[in-house]
Length: 308
Image (cartoon, rainbow, N blue to C red; front, side, top):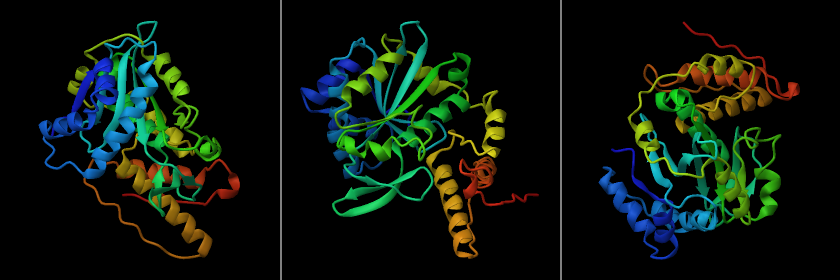
């Protein structure tokens, strides 16, 4: 499957979203052209509902309308797809990209799971899901930590989320720094925050630089010089935002299970499957840091990592 599904100028994207109402059909065709054998109905629904919302937010921005945007871009060596990204240069000609995770959610509740909220995914049906700003932050972290072009160009990769159907009152949860320490760097925008989202994007991209996505797409995958530092910080309890969602889910499962087992004095076994280089040790190191060195010392659980 190809990584680029849909790439157009901001002006063409806005036209497709708000004038011709053809954006869902265009992205759907792009998925087929990129080699996806099936397009799920819920994907189409999300494109119809969420893409016009961000088009409206950016319609009256000061951004050059010839700047590029992409939808459903797939990260290299991954199945992760980025809902929306916009890239170019800022006023100082620094290359930047902004990743926006889009959600149709209307309600959320707090939950105990790591980096997650309890949200309504269907009428009357709630599930635990990663905070969308955490997802976007991890996507940005993967590009910064493993993409050679991003590293050589010292590109800025920024992240945020846009829950365009969510009442601002839920900001007490979605923007709670004590629960979600990543929010200052990857803000969460809700219904009524279009101006804030627009200002956030304008800060990083204002003029076009068409070759950025193609260069990222063709770049080698190599760890950055800062990766070792990230590992050291993870052992201190500072989260690594370089995990893909499969790794993040494994981390969340381990941390939640250990805390439950500790609280109820139970034994549990978790098997994480994955071949060499899939990140099992990175998951273990992150779990170790989360359990041994949490922000609240009262939450500390003495944990050992035993390996050959």
